[in-house]
Length: 89
Image (cartoon, rainbow, N blue to C red; front, top):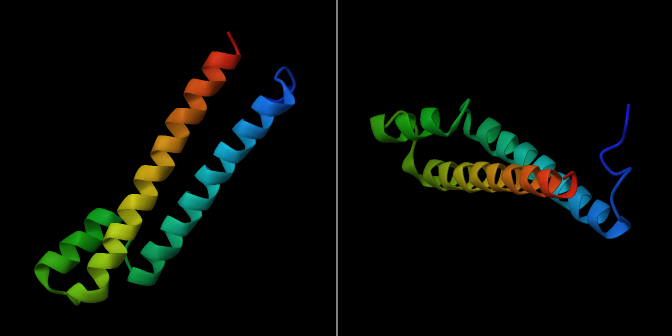
């Protein structure tokens, strides 16, 4: 199996590696936040907040943290995909 780093410069390989690290860290931190909040996903947590089955504080802050982490992870995934497409032309 060919490495994705095999045909790129060391600088680009470092950039790709750092982006992949951001993806991993944001995904895992989102998972931890949601676990701490006792929710499977952001929508479930927000629903629990609006129905009043969990207290608003700190649940809403956890919801925001999970959303930010999820959005950041998705943006990093898109950036990595675009960069890989660019370097593999």
